[in-house]
Image (cartoon, rainbow, N blue to C red; front, side, top):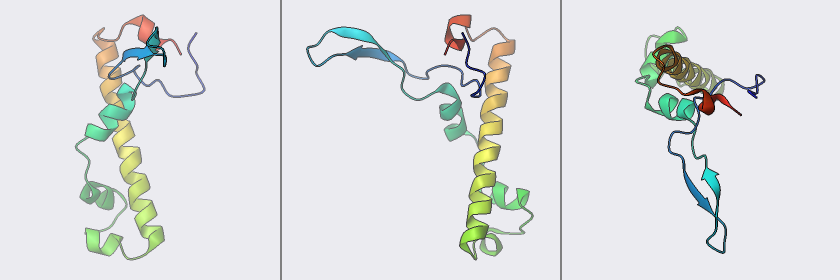
Length: 103
């Protein structure tokens, strides 16, 4: 069953075997989610986030801690919007299997 309280993350980006201390196979390590991986790879820069926040340049945007938080929050939001769009595009093409949707 899918957990609708969290955004769909596309499943694991690099799943691999998980072993106990005794060397017994215990399942699969999930690793980073595909959503997080896509967000980390998004071609969104600090300059993009500064522009999104209404600053003309990075030097204007980075004068105070509150301005920095605003820019970094915008950068994270833009990157995760990009990641969500990538997952939606993959899902529309049938790349994601239904088993990866289970939480």
